[in-house]
Length: 194
Image 1 (cartoon, one colour):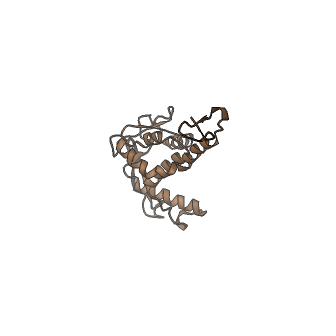
Image 2 (cartoon, rainbow, N blue to C red):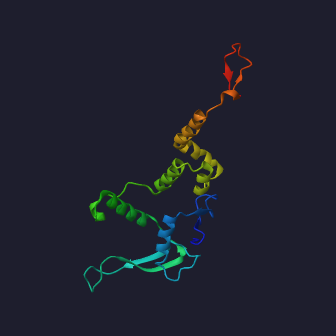
Image 3 (spheres, helix red, strand yellow):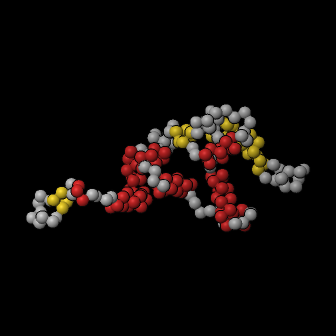
């Protein structure tokens, strides 16, 4: 994680093209990650932002002042988080509560979303904003073969942008003097744009 350079470097990935690639960070996510990283005293730039944590039981509820829940008793910032599932489930509960306008996560239904849906949403939003396809493919870490498959999947997204592009051509005013008579037309009145 390079906070000064605003870049995140992917560690081990499912594909060779994903491993080691650098992803630029926008101001919003950079602020969130910086806030999170400050919670770990003694953190160095080589450390993982999401460090491995060790949990333990806090004791029986209302017994000797313990809360009766799991507590984090150690973190190792030199090792990545082991399992995202618990954090992901908690995030979905919190998102469900926020979207339903409820204050307690227990009162609301978790957001129905797979982790990969976040990636799909990011690609869709980038393409809808007019970001060139090769730039999106680079950010996502797609190999050439994957980029071709994804072009088929996401090809419909840029249609509005494509229509706007060809509409520009329809709005171009061609001066009459730049028009020439078509050499193949027997009628003197026909003209063609050259």
